[in-house]
Image (cartoon, rainbow, N blue to C red; front, side, top):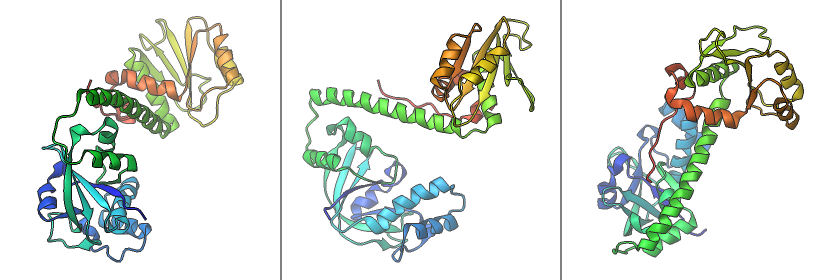
Length: 331
């Protein structure tokens, strides 16, 4: 097997970096697990994590188990490691010299370690935006792709400032990465929306309308005659527009019959919104277009866009349904 390169972070804020360098090693925490020398499987490690860290959710168990298992069982002698010094903007590269070792007294808070021979460094500014994106992962341990590994070695030991053309190429790559991050973020938001139950979905749609400036009423449980939510400027439906909303939170698409039934219950002065997280058939869209009552079809993509667009205007109850955090991106 050819040797691989692994990123091993030196703790939060790289607080272990000096120990990594001085003691010629890389190490990870999770001290409650004890010695992992006789670890037989990933499933056994997950069991140990659930026992030692009872506050971990199942997703956290799975993510952390994968990283720890790699360190204890998949790293090989002569594999390469890379770690980052954010203060100097330097990546340090070394080779693994030992098998897995457990010693709670060797490196602070990090009893699981491997000896390393540090042999060089690379300035982060010399790397492409794609490589910086890969190496910027927040995970404690990741396997570095071969193309990034090759790029790291091509720049190892360089001291000069990167050329301006490389900076311009980096800006273009950064825009590509930004688009990728936004696309992934949008999918995660849709995942969160999809996991709401039917009642929460009604509350989310009503919250969006309130964020748009309307007052809303959600119909009580029971037969609603296609009127899950009513919205208007005054909240009583006396002022126009009177917005009537039907919400369907299910996998399958809505067809023309559902849209026809919905529009049949609307009257002059109403505006209709039909929300279907399962989407709409071609016939349903045609039925909505030819309706005499103005109406809008909202699928999961448009719902996600509305959440993002009006999130700053949401009340606290609506934000709690889909908690989001704003991030900043360099321009």
